[in-house]
Length: 176
Ligand SMILES: [Zn+2]
Ligand SMILES: [Zn+2]
Image 1: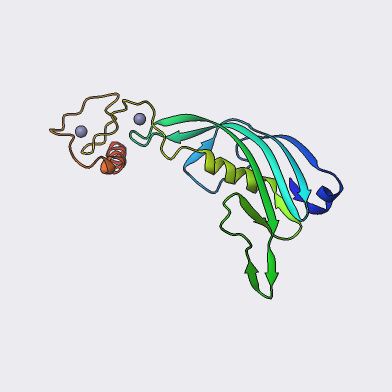
Image 2: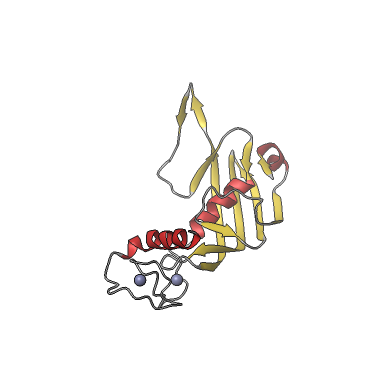
């Protein structure tokens, strides 16, 4: 759906839409949408600015930062956003009040709703997903998931950031 300023100039738009997984491009591989995304919002034109406010709700699947197993995250975000037209002077793009974090910009006749949703979902996801607070992660040596099995490595003191690499190695060796 495209929010067209010429339509918003006539009347505000009340939006209630469902987006099945795969219909919005989030421009990331950090998570997967696993449930229909529900959007309820109102869009209106204030002077030349598009104001859109409302809420989104969906479920995502991320990978546990420690053991890489899938983790489900419930996402609910309320937003109230203002988009100003990009003013162009010659070829130069002038961004007014660029320091205001809550203000975005639109180019041309309006803005795509899917772009707004993708941005809001990206802002709503946790920095790190952990499957459970006591997740033991992967053994940095052999890559086994230490929640499920004990490995026979001598120590688990190596850099845990290398664990995903060890896991990839383990999967690769299993395939041989
Ligand atoms: Zn985990
Ligand atoms: Zn091990």
